Length: 418
Image (cartoon, rainbow, N blue to C red; front, side):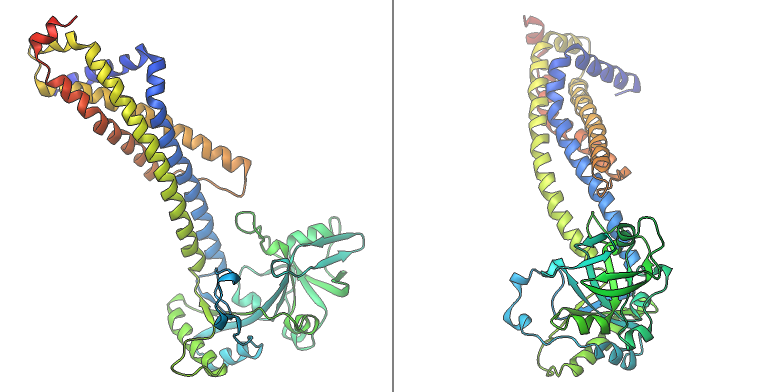
């Protein structure tokens, strides 16, 4: 087929769409819905993936966590062995620092928050805040967790920890709620009824997907925390290394040290859990894979419905243009020319539907990200090309039968057709 013939066939296909706009719209609707669904979900997942990667980078690829309980597993799924594990002790952090040469920082922390059924209140004069995370940390917490830096004032020191001082470093959201017009540093707040001096304010961190970030945290010395809330059993270790390449060796060293400290027999498994830096990214990948497969299944049904619609319309078009087919064959058109003409018409219809679907999907993902700022959207070139390719494949698959039927028609019978 020459370039001129290709251009003529495309022109005929577009004229056919314009000649019957109502029928064309209904034919393309399934294609538009299917491609739009894929593009919308893909753009949102891609945007959220970028947020996850950014969060992991902020958290640091050099940090891993150790605790009694497995991360990402609901307490209802814990076995009896997990429930009865020994608590972590503050001394573990020091032992790791002393016996693990690859480890740069090791810090212990514990939480007292609404997530675990605890109630907190922090108050300054007539202003108050609740539903925040109260965390006990030591002086190495900000070193091990680079995102937990004091943007104003200072962080908790070894002297604060050693003397169990009533001092606190608060998140930016807490600071704005309690001190809308004044500098919070040096002020005395009442934390669950106890006086605490504000010594620092953490850098801005809104959290992920609208969830709690450091803006909603109140940090106090671990020794102070343990004195006030001895009943809290959820203790964790955050361990960091100087170089990411040292992470596997550091994990081995920490595991060996904790097994010794916790008297775990050689033939038994660890009675603690290690959570690596890529845990959040892997968990998110599992969730998005399931979501995308579900969306792909629904959109595939829409594409099949749209493809069947294209096939039916093309079959009707072949019948309506029987005489035209006979005339073309009579003047020398070959079977492959007729087949190509109708395939190009089917392709034109589905590609137009695909382009509209991409536009609708891009607009929908943008609108969702505007209505819900916690959901960012990013439409990559890969998904634009994929949307166009899927729509083109639908045209080829469902347009082949009508095109073949037209190509096999007898020219004499076609010319006699009324």
